Every structure is written in C-alpha cells, then in structure tokens.
Amino acid sequence: AQKVTQAQTEISVVEKEDVTLDCVYETRDTTYYLFWYKQPPSGELVFLIRRNSFDEQNEISGRYSWNFQKSTSSFNFTITASQVVDSAVYFCALGGGYQKVTFGIGTKLQVIP
Amino acid sequence: KAGVTQTPRYLIKTRGQQVTLSCSPISGHRSVSWYQQTPGQGLQFLFEYFSETQRNKGNFPGRFSGRQFSNSRSEMNVSTLELGDSALYLCASSLSSGSRETQYFGPGTRLLVL
Image (cartoon, rainbow over all chains, first blue to last red):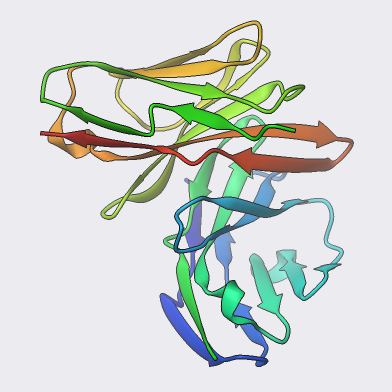
C-alpha cells in the first residue's frame, strides 16, 4: 500500500525566512511520481511539481526548490525568502500515471509579516 | 485560454438522491482527474480519465462513477447520496509533454448532503 507522511501539520515562519516542508513516502512500486500542491485560503488547488521516480535531480523554480532522495524516500520542498502569499496548505502526493494518487494530510504554512 | 470549469459550484442534496457534477478541461487537455476533499479524510483521488477511458480509480464504492466524452469533458455521478459524501469535489485537467506534466485545477463543486 502507498503512504505519504507529512509530519509537520503546521509551520509558522517570519517573512523572508526559508522554510522546508517534509514529505516521506512509502511504495512498493519501482516507478512512481511524486507531487506537490498548494492550496491557498481561497481553496483552489494549485499544482506545483511532478517528479518521476527515475529523476533524482533537484529542481528549482524561482524561490521554490525540491529535494528528492530515493534512499530516504523523501521529497522535501523548500521555500526561500518566504512571503505572505506563500501562506497556504501544502500537500505532497504519490502515484499518478497508471497508479492511483495518495495524498499526505498537508502542512499548513503561515508566513507572518 | 480558459481554465478548468466545474459546474455547478454549489449543490445541496438530500440523502438517497443522486448527483452529477461536470468538469470542462482546458482545451487540448485529454486527461481529467477527480478528487474529493473533506475535513476528515483530506484529499482523496477518485478517478482519472484519458481519451474517454478510465485509467485509474481510487478506493471509493461503486456509487461513485464517472465518464469522459469525446470532447474531453467529464462528469462524475454519485448515486444514493450519504451524509459523508458532503465534500469539495475537485477536477483537474493535465497536459503531458515528454516527462513533464502540468495540472490545472478547477474551483471545485461544494456538495452538501442533508
């Protein structure tokens, strides 16, 4: 069975601080996808990234970066120089393609001005 | 380019009734996925359709069904509604380019079952 653990339920940081959201997953599949999503207070889900299990390269997109480590089954998400607009619930997920998607419970990030 | 649209946005039904939700993907997107979000269970995957074929299904009872039309529009149906079906139902359309995929979500349909 697939499982996604986001151990941090809530995080508060002061604006401009860096913050890392942890995601640990379990799967028996050798091929899988990992995802991150953002859900701001408005409620609409926003796709951030999809990573293939064969691609362990870290990715950077502006202030966002993702660290995928297969050895520790982790796919962590870092926001550099956080801003108030980053306040949201962030979900990590596993699956995709021909596999059903399993979500973590989400990490609520509050960025304090 | 128009985004993903979901109709209706809000819905109130009573137990035992059935409901049909609609999702229109972004033009050119052939993949549509459905998700349920509740305070208790969080985000759960319902199903995914690609070119009119159901590619995957989550762990939901047979009361939950869906389909995709030739124009990629998708509908999901819930029969014999239960109180626990009250949720935000989200639809996403996606486009793959090589190993990359981008998903776009609609605003959701909020269903309340009384």
